Image (cartoon, rainbow, N blue to C red; front, side):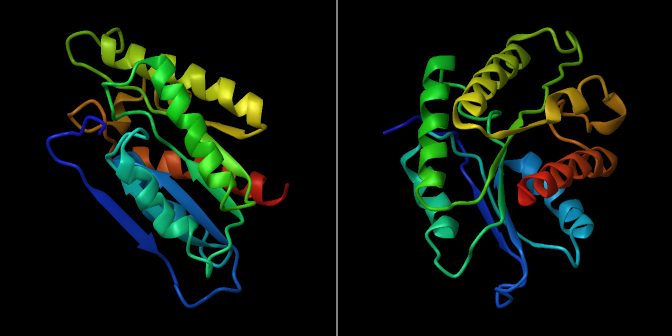
Length: 201
């Protein structure tokens, strides 16, 4: 069994569940995704409806595929684009392990959906005493490079949320990981831009 955090959680969101005619997108991620989901819905209002799975689990966790399968295995939903943002949890994974399980997740998604996939570069982690120069943020940078490599191999769209959020301390709350409403709205604009580009492919 994979390592787990002291508290594990998973949130599902299904917008306008009975409307199966309108385009539908799927957001996959963690608390960062959960925070920009609302602004994404506002920006896509009248254009597409939004499903979401936000989870604390690493991609190596046996329950991650079960949770993700809850939305991908549901034959009622056909997605027009999928946005994947995962990289801030599962600190026990080294870069090679992270890449292995990330690639497995891409294959898991593709086996269940023909929708184009957007992969986000995870947002930076800030510490008050060292800024971005510390192990946690170095891990994010290394994982983002692995995501770039996977995206190139599988011809996926990259959404660079790292560069968008780097150095924007006015977008952060005090924990160095999460964002205020302004930050989440800024990220949502980039997410919607990437989803729209994916949907017209």
